[in-house]
Length: 97
Image (cartoon, rainbow, N blue to C red; front, side):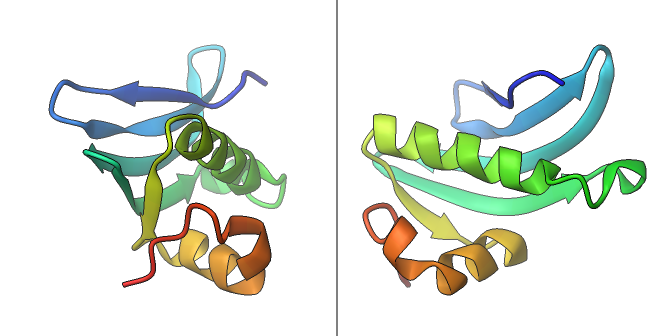
């Protein structure tokens, strides 16, 4: 399995994508404006559920946010749940609304 990679356009819309060869295993849809990253949705191929792939996407997003000094607005239910379960782990990047 490859590392999750950010694929983003010039308008700041895109996704972290997790692929294995030509097959997309999952994606985390994001938008970046200035110093804020909004996470809209996380989806994993149903055949790949239960393998921790959403966590791989989450870790890639968090790493990118920290490296680029971005605050994360978690509109995605999965990301919001992880931030709420582990508030200390994400306090530095969590933009609470």
